[in-house]
Image (tube, rainbow, N blue to C red; front, side, top):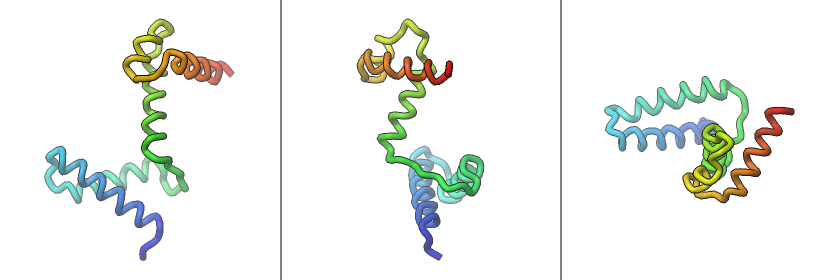
Length: 102
């Protein structure tokens, strides 16, 4: 059975195995399989799910970090840390503030 989801699962396991092996985890293949099943079950649990390319995921995670670290007074420091403009920080935090209030 070579369905699209099984191909994606095999790819996920291969990437996890590679990363776990690089970290020195013994029996990386078995560990990768267990981790993949657990993560998919807990996070997705049978629902269909679109995952964008890594550049979009990294930008999303960066923005989440910026929002978490933002204290109202550290726009410049965050802009330097995350290599974005101060204006980007202002737009992001304004948008998130509006969404949290409304």
